[in-house]
Length: 332
Image 1 (tube, rainbow, N blue to C red):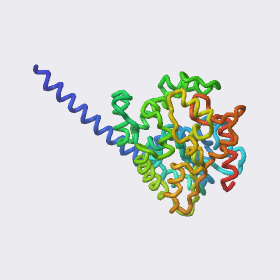
Image 2 (spheres, rainbow, N blue to C red):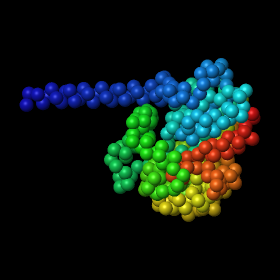
Image 3 (cartoon, rainbow, N blue to C red):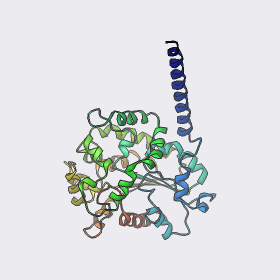
Image 4 (cartoon, rainbow, N blue to C red):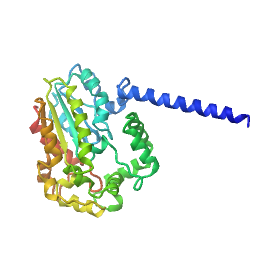
């Protein structure tokens, strides 16, 4: 019994140290005191581009913009325009809230002549306010998603820990398979659909519960755009969800439990998520919206799929179509 007070004291001290450490880590992350994504940036860029005193384009995005070199649409733009400098600071798994922790420092460091911000309509609204449900998800997942909405640094830890996850190996196999198989399909997508079978339909249409998430996302977008000087043009590139492109992808998603009540509406170029954001951000005269949905719809055929069969990311052909689209829309 004499040991019990000592044990309590040790546990209490350990908890205090843990909480203080997490708070310090959060401050370091949230205010970009340390460049937490230095390794990711180095992987996506040449040393010459990173040390340039001013670059032509600074690119912010998620996994769609941070894919492997020679596949990435940004690398294709580099090939098309060797006289232009592109610095790609995209990071897989992040959203606008994480971008806002380091956007100001990156803009100050690289002094871009123009900025590209890549939006992915498939999950950007849940990146600012995670899904959670005691019925559909485990206790640990609910706790992580709930806490990470307040402690942004946890998303960084999750990003780093993902490298040790078996999912990385299985996903590499999934994305390398051209044949659609429900059992091979991306687990994250299945998780979304387990939460709400109409997840993608309701996200694109801004139906509940995603309408409120949109307001959070919009506030973060305002914060991002207001850090950028008015004389720097900003290009918002909207990556379509595969279900918007054609029935091939929607039918595949139906097989893993998805429902689409607004099939015609989500295929329109002015679908609600895009249309409302365009209207709500029109005050920024230096911002141009780039929506390649119609281009994707024309170019995605039986013989030339632009997305992976078992993953909602764009493949090599998709990156090529996207780079060609941007080549015609950007001042290159």
